[in-house]
Image 1 (cartoon, helix red, strand yellow):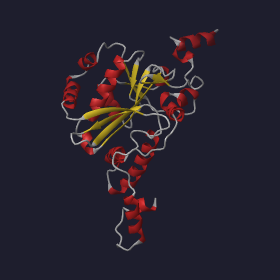
Image 2 (cartoon, one colour; image 1 turned 180 degrees about the vertical axis):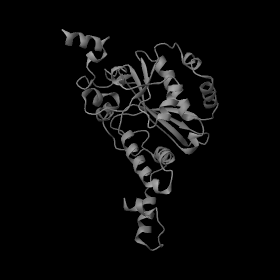
Image 3 (cartoon, one colour; image 1 turned 90 degrees about the vertical axis):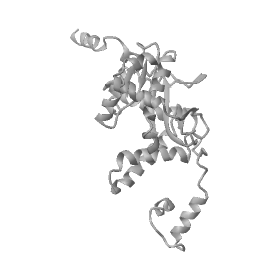
Length: 289
């Protein structure tokens, strides 16, 4: 930690701080080497439950509204694209014209996360500094935010969609999880270069494509937005901002992976009565006797 702090200042060659920095640099892993803690799959899933509404329905905390898209009315992703305003369709066309490679990597239990590498950490740092550091004084708070978000995402479940440029460098990644009848777009980070290449729009289109094609999936969930402007951007692409999202997006059931499902979380799943039709009217009828 001291070496990390020392890199942000100039030191004499014979300074003990210079020695610390040199020793730290000598053991830095390769750019794409995964070095994260080999967290068990069950622990990864448990760490993801809050994003699936566990804290919301139990009353432990209330999150911001989630951006939801009901995909049941679309036969294909082309139907969804046709439903969008012309400006959105143009943006997606620009995104689809980019020269990048997309790689799906599962997050497995008892192995380092596939995004626990320096290359992916760079994405998170550049992303947070770009959004939060308007002045030099904002740099360290943005770094703190980046480190916290990174350690959270590499400890959670799901899979990543990794975007690499023509030179093979990671320019963005999207982390997703499927549970119950929902695909949750949970994390998205990009380098400065990735942000200029319409990667986020491509990742949203890919999420919608797979949600429509997946059996038993009703909603794509892009989660909460940090600003009203981002909520408005998601709304342009059909994602409605829903305050009581945990009663709409049905996260009951195990986490779903390619070829298998995870353990049951029935004890922490939303109760069935949350999804009963006309629930409010039924409750009021009972109150009135």
